[in-house]
Length: 577
Ligand code: ADP
Image (cartoon, rainbow, N blue to C red; front, side, top):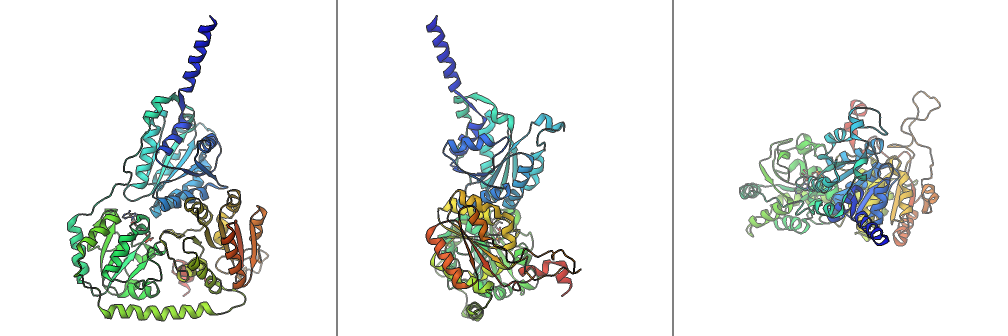
């Protein structure tokens, strides 16, 4: 009898062992598809999911606010071409992550927001569950796709669909809703294993139609003043060598959008960055490579674009064509395939642009670069944006493989113009929305994904949105050096309350604030610097040591312009002009 009892117990134990559950299946499905990192914030009902993910060898980076975790996941997607995964709790946590998901979709970054959710039956009858919210419905308009999984045996399909939706075609944000009950569901381990899907070719190449390539090359041949415009889609596509070959073989001047800087080094002789206004206004044929004619490019029309021109547009999304102006030669496909097809058709007989055009561009460039050098060389006391950026320009030149995160208004505009980038996908900034608050999320993910140092240069206002993540940076001991350009306020730090009342002006912060102390509070290194020499030594020390560092760079409170370069979008100040 005892033997039978033991046998039964052994059987029961085996049965027990041979079970799996929703928690494990989600983790197994992610791992099976090469996803190694999760950015998130644990809590009910995903605490155990995060714990188990860590226990199963995934790297789980826990943040202090879901929006920052979401931004980290989004930029991880941009950096790796794999969907960055953000994990949040239900309702409020989900909503915090949703801002980042919408931002990822807007920027064409592949990301999956996985949120735990309350019980469907209660949510749908609106019976007031813990953190009740119809998350799927809310996520849908902000995501490229949104899925919910109700049965453990469907987790493999849910994760596979989320991955495909995030990275195929135009990348974007995907929402995956996992009700608490699903995570606890158990099923036979073997069946569970078989239900998982290893996605084959998640972002298939999309070859352009040969006649579209011919049309584009024919148009390019007629150009007298051609221009190539590289966008962050080109950076994402990782077709670096072919893009460089296209630029160099054709001899056409090129302009990088901000996150495409470094695709070719900004010091490349064909870079027309320093003659941006001139080339945009004067060009007659413009080749857009992974760049949209949105507000960042004045919608392809108006004064910025001056003379009439024709566009060749390379993009994976067919519906991007003609979105703002007529596209004479659309080339639809993935950038790698499109650029290599163009290269195949551009023979050695391709006539490089005439000397008139190239000399005119060079002339503008040299004039503007000389002007910039003069501005940078000025010694000012107190330090202003330019004297501080002069130092950082040299730091990036000496350390071209570090990631450079940049957000703010003036801090963003000036840094984009002053700091040359030398390698692709190293400049990470506010992107399509021009949004504040991506700084620390991007910095954390850049450090995690590249294992290289990160220099994050943030305006004091921008830093405030995600500043609490300095604790995360310290906790994970990441080689992140943050420089806060502190001019005591939004845009500037000298505004007065128009009523003369006790409250400060709406754009003011505490004057003389010491952001460096925040980093010290968590065991990192803090510096307060007031001169370019102090700034230089503090940044170099941070890069050398790899220790989490925050440098409070005191900038003249009177420096800075209202809304940075976006004054035209500010109704009051543009009306008063
Ligand atoms: P920027 O802000 O730098 O101008 P955008 O985000 O406006 O860049 O544009 C990026 C474009 O690149 C989008 O239209 C997107 O569809 C496209 N894109 C992204 N990845 C690829 C790819 N692999 N192949 C082709 N086009 C791509």
